[in-house]
Length: 218
Length: 218
Figure 1: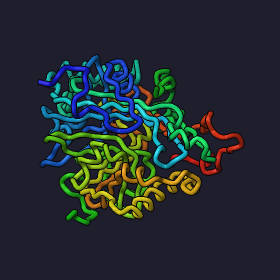
Figure 2 (figure 1 turned 120 degrees about the horizontal axis):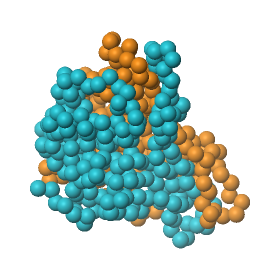
Figure 3 (figure 1 turned 180 degrees about the vertical axis):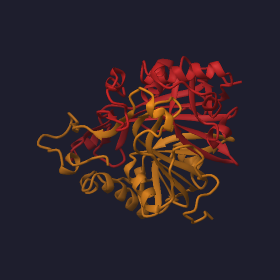
Figure 4 (figure 1 turned 135 degrees about the vertical axis):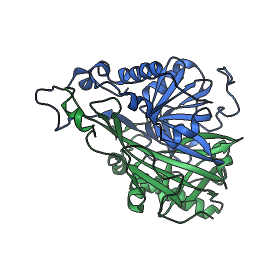
């Protein structure tokens, strides 16, 4: 049974410099929601395997999905995994190499996954997933077939043991280094969408929906 | 001894739909170089732990570094890890939910790390790291102290067992779905830099260097 606690565990406690570990749910949820994808780590034959995938959150649970043939999904279903999301916000250029760093938001979750087995529940969570990203699209799509539902594995993981880290702001140099004559500052990094590209095979008269035009990464 | 081979292993072979597994070194190197950061997975007490960090490449070796107090660096030094980088290039909106996907470039590396122990070699690879990102900055910085070098752990991993995956282009729908009247296409996603922000504590007369103005993410 996963430990339900906001307190840091040995695994989630930060030991790195210039990191600000946070354990409140609001920060954790905001980072999970802002990150367009995550990396899931699981153990295969005694070694760690790290696979990127798209996740979504509903309340205090995180979901991801893919082909039922996916090794990652087969090997992590019912097992302990580590799910990490990271958003890079900038390079931090200090006056010494040592104090250079990166501004970022990251969340690390540990937990045991379970496959969503029920057909109706699968459809429901897939709709939640689509509607979070593109509200209004689900109803416009060609409905899922039984074969497609069977070919799709969805994993759910309660947010149990988790931590978030947020670093921001200007370099933190040694007091005496502020006299060193080198430019210091931050190079901001952003991840954004560009104007959508229509499939040349779209039917005549099909307009780009508002939910596509409005889509943004936070 | 890590296997030196471009052939796929059981761990790196792709089993997901719509993925294009590639094993050539040029593709692998290009993805590693374009990604501003990676996720390193290692095993701790039988469970996978996935930590984000900044990596760099020199020839057929990948490096990363951090505080010598870092749990990730202490636990992965001399051990097998999985290093994964992922660049998201776009959301692919198909005519069925099932065929929605993401255009991305990803590389997954497995290997055994070793700590860079020699003082001169540590300085050399840190200079390579800095000069890859900001050519000309290393010589302008306050030089590293002995204490800082000791407090910095650098890991090296030969690129042994590795694979890359690249997906691109428009949705691949079922033949009959092209008649379904819904907009399909791609929403491009880019990660970019914004104009650098000078530290308010910079000395008077210190101008932003050209290498900062020119910095771009590929």
